[in-house]
Image 1: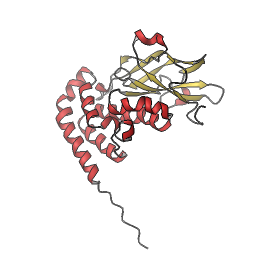
Image 2 (image 1 turned 30 degrees about the vertical axis):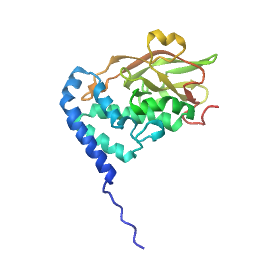
Image 3 (image 1 turned 180 degrees about the vertical axis):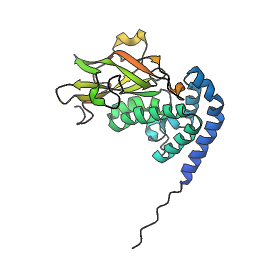
Image 4 (image 1 turned 45 degrees about the vertical axis):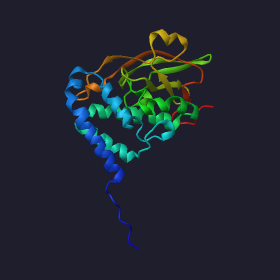
Length: 247
């Protein structure tokens, strides 16, 4: 029995999304590429316009404010934007893939409802805090620790090469929570807030020291450092990335 032929042609929706992303990149991004790269300024206006097109919640359900596109749709969006400015494509990937996707796939329903609408709508920009000076892709070498003190989690450490550390608002931050169990690593949602509110028990994720990324300088990759205090059971959702969720 002959096998059914596999079609590699884009769907009508993919073609439409691709053309929309291409037109946007040519009209809105291309004229400003060197401006943002040379000034190392985060392109807030461009991200605001991408949010209006649904790109910041591209493949997430409409119930959370997403555009409900497919991953292939998102792929062609990234391709078209990266052709013009890879730094904007990098930022879009970091927001959707590193921050929003982890909250969507692993967080509780309560945390999804709390954080996803603002992230998917573009009201807030997301980031991901994994890499450190002594542990790049080797997460097992992580030195940032989270310790529970009373009803609060206190995170101490320094992260490095964190996209959106300066420009972002909501971060998924990884920290060691149990050194006795093969160095269990847990994920926390941390909101970046001001010094004036850091003493109210909210988390603080301070981005400092912009790092020069070759050809991607407007993505503003930087160090993030300091102490973060999280209120009880608000932002902590996974006991370990390699075991079952916390109870």
